[in-house]
Image 1 (tube, rainbow, N blue to C red):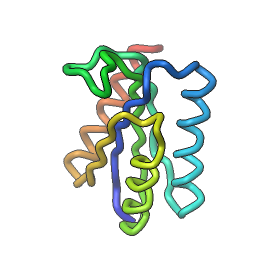
Image 2 (cartoon, rainbow, N blue to C red):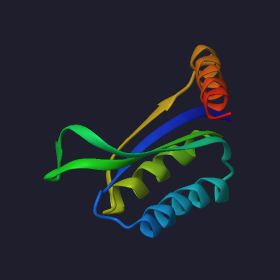
Image 3 (cartoon, one colour):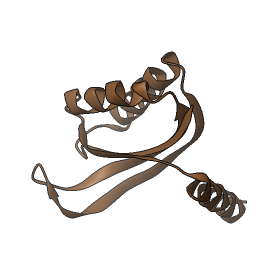
Image 4 (tube, one colour):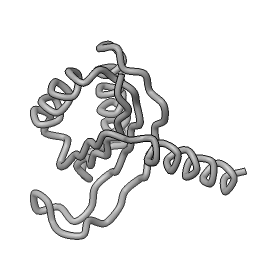
Length: 113
């Protein structure tokens, strides 16, 4: 099992319900194929650095998970097929990136408390 982090941007014209449905779709996609979710983050609506599909903003979401390597090909194919996804990026995490992600999550938790 490898550690991964995926950030994806959803179309800004989607309703809150549609955004939640899309996020749940991809979470279920991963868990049904043996992935284990480590963390999920909703970064909200953010302005893009440059226009994508004539849009100036998008809903950002992050998934951190462990999964077998062969799941990634299917996940990225599914991202490409879904018209609600404007962009996505998946990276494999090494031990240094894992520790950094854990520190970042702890820092976010302490700010919310």
